[in-house]
Image (cartoon, one colour):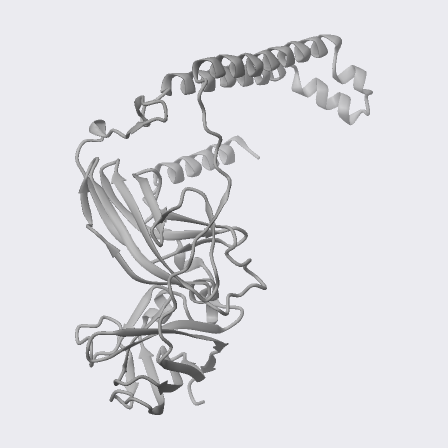
Length: 400
């Protein structure tokens, strides 16, 4: 490589480093459709506010259903899961998290086919606008995020505090607690690493390279002086580790080990199964971006129900008959309700560009299957939620 090429490469790298735009989301669209559709189905997610001051709290609440047809062949079941929030860095801190009213500070085991209610309390830390999602991390499957929104944090970063009272009754600020000790130990280890690297950088590289290419024995590559220096560094490193352990233990004699246990949270009670729905056929028209499914619906209750919503991959398709202001529409034929004791074949159609913009179509999924939550409503506002899917989606092109 010539000097001119090297300079050009450095200029390009510097330019790319200088121009680093802020990420506007968390890349959830890059996840396979089956992972977003057929694992955790989020619904009723609410953010208490979209604007907080530094030190103020916001609450994220909602529910999720674990799909019965979980793709266990490619994603392990959620026997080891963690409730969290997807946020670009520590812009807000998580103060508390609950599943079905149980405080979760460890991993949890979740049951397939059941529902859970969550609550997450966040506190503003850094001013700015940030995109937040509730999230479940599944061991072996990665993060599965729920619906997100932009939250604005206002105020002065310097006023942020995070006080807690320890088991010994002492009140400390987690934002600055033992910060000097942490910085000090980092500096000591960095200095040791730089000194070790500097010693070997001072040795002539070219001479050693020629010896290696010439097949020189090890004794000529590492001198007796090198061995003595290496032993000295080893002794210093061991003394730092041992000394750091004893000094830290003396300064903080009362500690609690990091918690690694697993909590079994009882799912929500199962809702009455007085409305049943099964998918007979599902298609996706590529040119018109139209998803359609034929349903067999049976109402065994004593009151009429009407299909009002289909939720999949954090997108809500709403029946305009019940929700006139719906952004994404679900057209249902026949449009009337399913009366008590009636069994009816229905066709639900969702024609929307969101299938492409959210990367939910067959072009992005190696399995070409779908799943969704269907929500049926009666005249009194009662709701029945049914998970359907895991069947194939038949693609349709122009002329077919």
